[in-house]
Amino acid sequence: MRISAKGRYALAAAISLAENYDNGECITVISISEKLGISKIYLEQVFSLLKRGGIVISEKGAQGGYQLARIPRLITVLDVLSAVELALFEQTEETVNEKAPEIESVMKAMVFDSIDSAVKDVLEQITLEDLVNRAEEQKKNQGFMYFI
Amino acid sequence: MRISAKGRYALAAAISLAENYDNGECITVISISEKLGISKIYLEQVFSLLKRGGIVISEKGAQGGYQLARIPRLITVLDVLSAVELALFEQTEETVNEKAPEIESVMKAMVFDSIDSAVKDVLEQITLEDLVNRAEEQKKNQGFMYFI
DNA sequence: TATTATTCATATAAAAATTGTAGGAATATT
DNA sequence: AATATTCCTACAATTTTTATATGAATAATA
Image 1 (cartoon, each protein chain N blue to C red):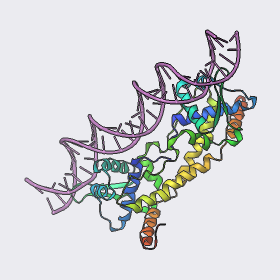
Image 2 (cartoon, helix red, strand yellow; image 1 turned 60 degrees about the vertical axis):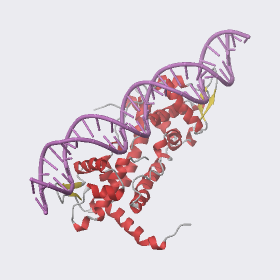
Image 3 (tube, protein in one colour; image 1 turned 180 degrees about the vertical axis):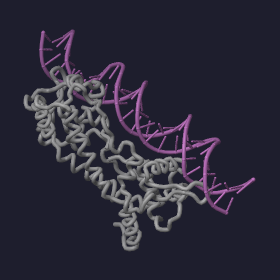
Image 4 (cartoon, rainbow over the protein chains, first blue to last red; image 1 turned 135 degrees about the vertical axis):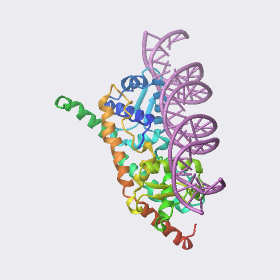
């Protein structure tokens, strides 16, 4: 399943904020854009969506920036992606066929709704805390890892 | 999750073929396009993908058309959609960040791969037979159903 | 108070993907 | 020979995604 660049940016940014959550400081868009190698101007728009979705809070002006709106354990990947991706669960694309309504409704009930709920189930089990922990583990173990 | 028009057309067409599987006759693109209310020319391209994917077989010329390549019970929704939708499982969109490789790899391992396998698990459990049966049920029960 | 660093809002442009059309070649049936 | 179909390829239109540009609003700080 395709997660758009916007979704990937949002998730990477949210993880970056989560990594610094404890020190309580604001983080600027430009610092994240540099860290991740993403256009700053585009990332601004992503943050604007994250804010509208209640994922982050902001502080204007010098020394301002963004913080997570709550602790990383209480923010799921579903929260982040649905704040940003319109197409994550898209309703009522009912333009397939007016003349064969039972095919339309069977596809929706057995296929599309099933996919949606499976994806939702997965994404709401993964929190930003989980992701940060795993990333930390990975950094630690880097010394012991090698590639073949 | 967004399934494109192409995917929905393909699935609806496959169901239509499955409904007529038993009588063994070929079905033309134009008859399905009329039944479903889809552009015939576009649907031709969809069928060309279904054929390339081994979902259908074809017969050229007058009295020609398409048939399912095997019985509906042995064709899953995953088969149909992956024959047609490039974006169903899309690999290696690794352009998020070169500088933060652990974020990249954590997102892939914990999020994107999880979604993909959840979707795959769901779609490979649903066969065309299941869909046809459900559509039949629905038609039968229509007399007893009413809306409030 | 002026300067600076930031978010915030909006418009637009560029690129990519999706959806659809057109025309005709190949082929099988009648 | 005529007809009905798949098949192939190129193109066009539309929509979505990605990115840029510009400047207003606001808060800190010198």
